[in-house]
Amino acid sequence: MKLTANALARMMDFSAVRTEVDEAEIRELVREATRRRCICVFPMPCYVPLVKQLLAGNPDVGIGGVVGFPSGAVSTATKVAEARQLLAEGATELDMVINVGMLRSGRHDYVAGDIRAVVETAAGTPVKVILEVHHLTDDQICRGSELCVRSGAAFVKTATGWTPTGATAHNVSLIKRTIGNAAAIKAAGGVRDLKTLLELYACGATRFGVSHVAGGRILDECAAQES
Amino acid sequence: MKLTANALARMMDFSAVRTEVDEAEIRELVREATRRRCICVFPMPCYVPLVKQLLAGNPDVGIGGVVGFPSGAVSTATKVAEARQLLAEGATELDMVINVGMLRSGRHDYVAGDIRAVVETAAGTPVKVILEVHHLTDDQICRGSELCVRSGAAFVKTATGWTPTGATAHNVSLIKRTIGNAAAIKAAGGVRDLKTLLELYACGATRFGVSHVAGGRILDECAAQES
Image (cartoon, rainbow over the protein chains, first blue to last red):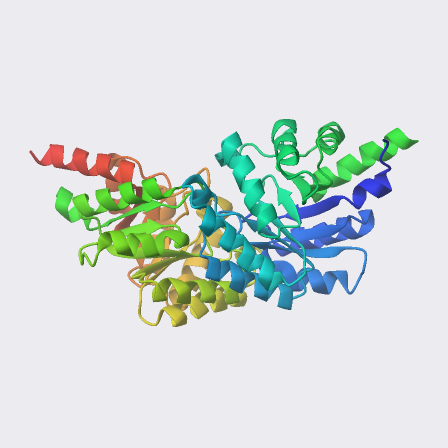
């Protein structure tokens, strides 16, 4: 199946979620997201009000809020408070980080409860749950994926982009085999060219987290192949 | 001035604040902190209840809570909610991350208000403010340090430990020249041996953030020089 650049843009979240991102970069992010018509834009939480203002009601581009990002190791109460704040400020999607340390400790009930609390707070707004695969064994990736699905996640997502490794054909396939169609898959962390993206798409990912720079380059590559 | 290992331990915060830290590492952290009598132990927020239970009322070792860690780019409302939760769970010190992106954007009023909101929530519990120097120019380090002092920080702290560079003689001296005795300085990020620690102490730092592994090694080194 051949993806057009237009269709591909509607599978891409443009993000700028590093510590040092300043207002100028957020303006650039929103400009590119609007121009490219990507599906959603992800700033760090403190910039959600600015993004909402810059998008000025544009219905094409959603506003993403990250929760417990990037460590996942804040308390459930803090994740819930952060989710509530982001929704009040206009977030239309939430990407939360799973509690990686508790998952590695075998505290599956804690992990499930942590996700469920955010899903319930979101009250219908889709929640993607980031596994942070770099720190997990294959077994923990499977177990984490099951917990996401069981707790109401709309998507299982590979990585925050803060770790040395992220989405790979291996771990996207592993997640797909584990969850089937019970949730969608967002590939993030290391998606920097069209070839990688298409490989992950073939493995079952239908959403891609990219920087606006990589995203623009990938869409240009895709458009060049159409012509 | 010669520091004894006992005196040095009372200047050290032992921390385990990475994504992948599991319960076993927290138990080890608390064991080492107790054995070495360091001044305070810093887990990620989700482990504060476990740390409190493990310390079992031991008055020697404080419980540190990190706020908006490690990005600093969560909303002020989320930092306040997180601080309140940590204090309710027993935290005796708070280390918050400054809003680095807003500082880089020149939004000094925002940055000051963000710190002040946490300091007010802390209501007397000391708040250390992490600048995350890796992402700042010398000018921004000075400006950030001034904003910390003006907003009621007890300490200015160099780094989270999540960036490639952290405390150096250069930036600790720069902070010291900027704030004088208006607040104390905590050096963190890259403090892994006694020589580095003593150099930073000579520059004006009086608190040191270290992993329990590096902390133990430094205290052993110090004790060996006493005998």
